[in-house]
Structure formats: structure tokens, C-alpha cells
Image (cartoon, rainbow, N blue to C red; front, side, top):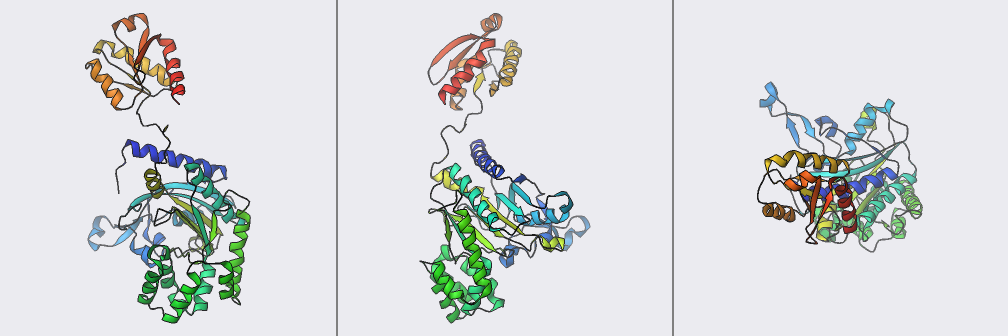
Length: 432
């Protein structure tokens, strides 16, 4: 969990602003949920490993000594969404599209791009089983990353029922499917040998391990997978669903970005259909991921509502963009457009009045509060990147004028106070 200094916050707001605008272009509506959920809302939704990473909140007051927990910090934004839909179903449209950009918490081991508190930027569509839902989600992800400046990302896609069929045909017992998926989900991180070792440690027989790795080792192809699951009706339906999503996505900005990857597992246990993940070359983990979870709302509502979602990981996006120097040079780093210097206490009223006039005109104005040497005040403005300094001395106040110093150009001009604001705005536009 980290502190964010002003430059960090500006970069975060820049990325969030772009992602939010893209989500709204696709018809998604905003939603927010509390940081804290009842612990039973979260437990059992993320698999064995996920349960261990939930930040639990101990009971308070007279129950504190029991060491029991009744609340928890939210682990993701999807389970809270499912609770909201179940709780407020009568107030929501049958086809509900929402976006949510809020922090989540996981008791994980920190690493590059991995933190205990981090933001997720989610979009979810509820109410339809059409593959067009997945295709549009992939397109929204593609638009957001492209507008942020990424051009080398890949959206990997697979299907949980296809994975189940592959595991069954490979000879993995149904009771071992969860263990096998957790291991296979690490193929891109620890490689085939690492996955083989982890499968063995989880009790998967050698024959089944060999069969799985033969399917998943690159180069993979839909033909090889189709041959392996041939005769398994669920597997064939799942493969056809993946193809339908890819065919529809070919008409969107995700065209050429979507790649079928039968080894993609995603560890969350609530996925029921297509699953997706976004990768770039220089990041071991993913920039985002998601999938279809048609049964999750039913855990709270008693009836299933089809649902599919995708999430971008803000922290990892920021890590890669910072390392690649992807932020625009025009991204504001100065706290103000202009600083009004203070000559003496008698001129404070005039400075505050002028600042109010300029702020009303849309300028960001900092009034230097202390009557220090003018050179020291100008040096402060320069060190903060503030491009203009306004000098409002006794003569300027008397004549209703102001002298504006352009620090980069090392020039200054005197204007009437009524004209000065427009002159500064014009100069800022010329600076780009």
C-alpha cells in the first residue's frame, strides 16, 4: 500500500480519464460499492488461493477477543457487483452495463506491478449470453489501451468448459480439476517444466500431465485442440463459442489482437464460459483479464443471470507506461498556470481579487502567501514549473495593471488587469 505524490496522482488521473471515456462510449454506466463486504459474501468465490488473500476484519467490541472475522476488504469488483444486482434487481435494467473504477485489497506478496492495494477498472455486461458481449468487451479493452499508447498487446482467449473437457480427456479426475487449473494458469510465468512439477505436486498422474502438456505446448492451434476434445459435446460447444467471439471481434478494434490460447486458465473459480487476458511482452503478469460468470449472481439471487466482465489493472498499466516513457509531455506537472507574487501585506487584498478573476476565466492560480524577496518567489515558481509570474506592486495596484513575467522566454509585459487573464490564456495555448 503506497502514498501517491502529486505527479503520481496526475498520471493516474490521466489513465483513468482515458479508460472512463472509452467505457462510456460503449454504453457502460458508473457504479460504486463499499470498501468492506460481509465476509461470507467474498469467501468461496475465488478458489482456495483467493480465500487466503482476503484481508479479514476482526469482530469489534466484546467480540474482539474471539479473533473471528465478520467483515473483509473487497478482493475484486465482480463479486460486489453480483451482490448489488441481486440486492437492487428491481431498480436495474434487464440488460445492465456498468463500469467501476475503485481500489481492491489482497494480502499478496508485493512485486513489480503487484501491490496489496490497487485499482481495478472494470466493465461488465449482465443479461445476455450472446458472444457479442465478449466481442464488445474485447473491443473496449483494445480501444482503451490503444488510446493510452499501447500497440503491442495481445488479448488471449479461452473457455472454461473447453479446459474442463481437455482435463477430462487427458485423464484428470474431476476432483483434481481445480488443482490442475491453478497450475496451468502459471504456464506463461513458470514454463512447461514448472507447470509439470506443480501438477505432480498436486497429485496429477504422469500420463495425464504428459497429455496436457502436449495440448498446451506452443505452437497451439484450434485444430489440435478440436482433435483432442473430439466427441466431447461440451468441449465442441465451447470451442465454437470462442470462434464466434473471435469472428465478431474481427469487425471491431480488437481485430488482429485476439489470440486463441487453450492454456489460459485464470484462477478465479466463478468463471463459467469464455475467459480473456491481456499481455504485453515486457510484463510477466497481465494488464487485465476477465470472462463470463453466468452463475455468480445466482449465488445471491437464487436465479442465474448471465454476466461477463473485463478488468484493466491500473497499477500494471502505470508501471509499463512509466518504464516506456509513454506519458504525454503536455501532461500537466505544475500546480498552477500563473503565480501572483506578494510584495507586502498591504497588497494581499489586490492579489486575492486578481486571483479570483483569473480563476473565473479558467486559469489555475497560486498566490504566494509570504512577502519574501521577489527573486526568491520567482525562483520558487520556476522550480515548480509554473510558467508565468504576476507582479502586483504598489504602482500596478494604483494603475489597475499587472506585470506578467514569462519565465521560459525571460520576458515580461504589463497589461491592464482586465486584459491580462486573456493574454495568459493565449500564451498558454501557444506553448501547447
